[in-house]
Image 1 (cartoon, rainbow, N blue to C red):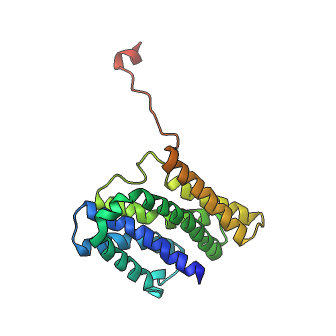
Image 2: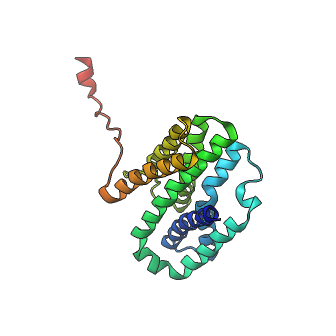
Image 3: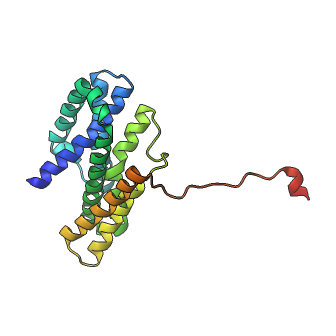
Length: 211
């Protein structure tokens, strides 16, 4: 029961970030619901489609959609207050990211037995909803921002998979994967951690090449 409640809470946090994106674009209530829904359940939907787990999770349990709708309505009427607490929401999002990269990896590993697939499904589950949110809202994507986001989910999923491979057991592997992801994402929020970015050298002038 506790895991189910945590699952709903994670969807609610992701949905809230989607609804806040709708508030910044001054959309109507349907726009809020749409943005909240694609952010809250987008990653899990892609995971289930990739694994061939049909119908997808929110079709089997529509409560996830209801959670997104309720969050969207609440944010529609309280967006200014939530915007002032956006930093707190980012930390809650970091917790959700950490949980979902492990949950997605566990589902991928259970369905296929492949560590590679587990890492991919873990990363997709945790991040694809946020990527969809930014693309639809026309905001800078989490893929293009300097601070670490997707990398944190990737690291958490990889840590979980590695721990499971050496026989640490599901509870300990899950805890280690979540901690890895949260520390990395938390460091990005607190200290501005970022990965090494590509910095190409400027092209040479044609006269220099001919020398």
